[in-house]
Amino acid sequence: MANMFENLSSSEWLLYISEWQHNNQGISNIRVTTKVSVHSLLSESADLQARGAAIIHNLACKEVKTVVCISVWLFV
Image (cartoon, rainbow, N blue to C red; front, side):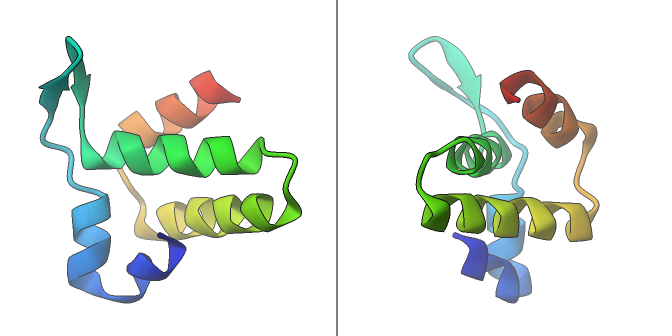
């Protein structure tokens, strides 16, 4: 997932904010991307922590919307 930020089209897909319903909850690509990065950071695996940090770094470099900041804050 961290490598998907290498290309513009794939990074835009990861950051797509349009929501759909799943199990009566609103979900979007950006929410999934954020959850994956936060859960990776909180993992006991050093490899997953490094990958989660890379995704968070890429999100920060893209200057994504406020929803990511709020999601990261809620999970941490």
